Length: 97
Image (cartoon, rainbow, N blue to C red; front, side):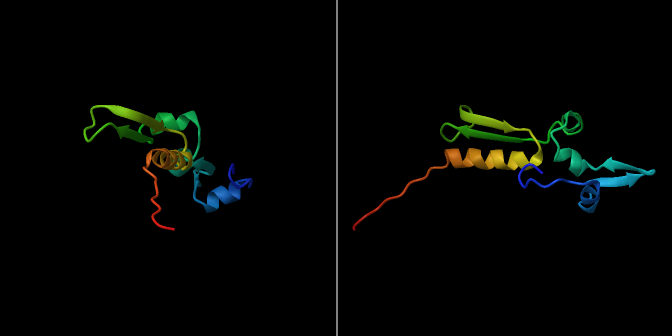
């Protein structure tokens, strides 16, 4: 795995139910496809993406920034979280000593 440096074996994929047996052959499940960066993901699940947008004012007529996260679903969540952190109003006020 990219984040942990672990090697995913066929046994591990079966345990996580990312591979299932079908007519004597191991086949990937939908979850496996969604976690992959394969072109098959885009073909089977073209709408499996996160759309992020920041608008000017209270209406949705004018975008300030927008981002589409359409990689594997693990990376999508990180991308959306980063978008929110980039646009969240952070601040602090210190009064007194």
